[in-house]
Length: 305
Image (cartoon, rainbow, N blue to C red; front, top):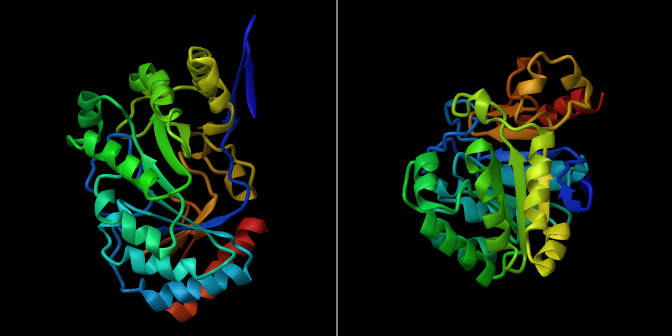
């Protein structure tokens, strides 16, 4: 837990950390949002037909053998993949794999029941603003009310926890308190704020240092009613830019501007498995399911040395 101290107050929230390597499935590059701050996890490589029920059955076996305990589905927008509930159902057959999904929530109402029935319990929903005009400016559409309704739907049908991923930069700092007031009154919701580093859609002037962000979060918590301050100590998280603690990151010239330093094996439809989004040394390609174990094993050796 982070504590930031001033003269008379102690501000408390949690530090979001990733301790073990996990598998991140990039189901699609397509998205129904056009978020200004988005950084692309994969290129637009050709779909080689790798994904399917046999692929995910084999992937679970490999993850269990390699003691990888988490598989997370993302995109693009993963709910644009029609077979996502089938894929989740196959992963959910494992009793040791923690299963997750990140979505923008726009079409969650059309999939929520099927996902829940398939075995998904945890869900992350990305949300840059609670204000319609700002949401429209960031995401390029007017779907905020639908997303908020779908968050309530996810809670109503039993998803737990529902994590709200909130990117922070100078333009939405004035909403931190609003996010806390709105979501900490809902049970089973976790707020996870994270810093956005400068990229093509976020200029240097919009970037906040870790010290600035923690100070703003602490100030917002102090303004909450006492009962919500107590909730914040266990349900508000801050994910700072990851510090390069691994050997594969220490010598990287881009590490100070990397939004998502090596913490996951990213597998995409083009057959590429990536430990790093930029360095080709940490990418391996598989063309058939039989090559999957070898590809993952090679990257694990690089990761753990």
